[in-house]
Length: 172
Image (cartoon, rainbow, N blue to C red; front, top):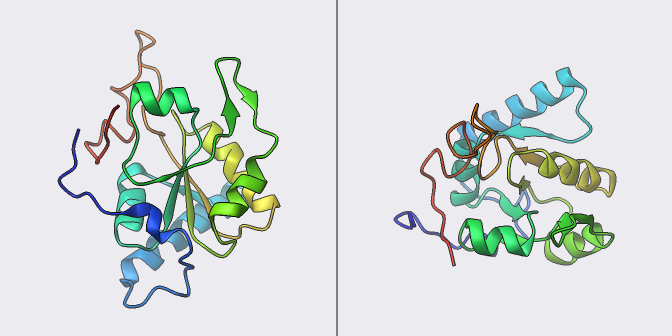
């Protein structure tokens, strides 16, 4: 329920990297480093950023954050306030959303810096890849996701993730 740094992140949806005025050089450097790591790893999308880097980019108005988790996950586990939602998979059966790219195109410009968030960073990587293939040149995965990886007791929340880093989030 951290909302002390609350900003309207969804309003940045049509902002492209070139549109931003007075953006700090650190943000360009951060994205360049992510791109270089992605190139070295042979990733099929622009790159990956940590949750804290994602918050830095989104809260500065330099990127739009798109949550690709299911409606149920957002409602019961929590979500980042004022972000866009385009589910990569839907329902409890986790069926791939065949309209993902069309829904994304309806909400975000293709030249925008887009940061994809899921539970652990795996579905968001797949979403970033699909977005890249559809022409989104600045599609980044948020590493660790919202909840992080499973720990030794097969629980999430203690090994990274958006919430672990105490970044702003809310729960219904």
